[in-house]
Amino acid sequence: YNQRVILIIYMAKKSTKNTPTYSEAIEELEGLIAKLRSGEVTLDKLPSTMKRANELIDLCRDTLLEVKEEIEDIASKAF
Image (cartoon, rainbow, N blue to C red; front, side):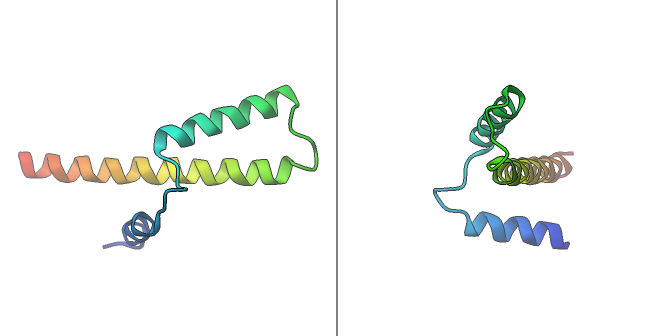
């Protein structure tokens, strides 16, 4: 296994109820983007908002990578 796969497996095992699903992460990210565009986020909240957005982006990216690898694995066994 490469380090990224090991990290994904570790994070999956470590995940708790507080970890959003892919759909929940996208929804929250869209909400943050809307707040940023509207100017609703104050300068004081900007760093924490950007940090949360990056966390959600990472979660989505990792989820997509995991699904891609799983699909490739299934497809390689099917043919």
